[in-house]
Image 1 (tube, rainbow, N blue to C red):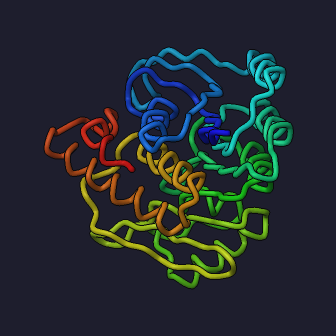
Image 2: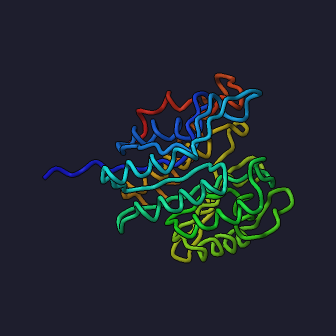
Length: 275
């Protein structure tokens, strides 16, 4: 019998303009020959980094949407979660993971809660505590430094600077919450940006030259490429290196085009290079 094409359920919002969330993840994962299946938490015209946006919260529709998938006997090789807008959504996604997870399903949680030492406006400390329920179910968790500190109940370090030993301590603490693999993302050191990888009790810090400034959707691009890579059977190191190199290339092209930060990464130019 022919092998079934692998597929990932993408639990995130769908944004019409701004190259973020599912709108960014889906084409990247598809280019890597994995079927991407949206489970939308909200529909937005543009993301919230624009002065005006339309948002349709999808919380009430989620139970029927998920039940339809269940009645159609759908299974997934990966479940990747992103931004969630409420404690109710966290509960629904937690239950979705429990209902659809098999021994072969890889669960990847990007705990999108804040950045640069501050929570996003929609997040409360109580919601952050609830995010720990998803992290406990994850095989991989990919917080930035702000989110890692929130999950561990630690103070954000001055200037966002951490030693490698501090990162090792934090990654080990996150692994104790449940996930076997941890990547602390978006670490800054002078003119470099990097990620801290942790698995099987071992950690490593990867840096590369910084290209441009912050751009919307970079975390979604990173999470999508890493998720597809791991579902394909790549190592964590290979997955992170592929994502970081691709983002750097897109960053350089965005600078060349002089794109506003909220237009995201112009990844379309390089989709055919994702293999």
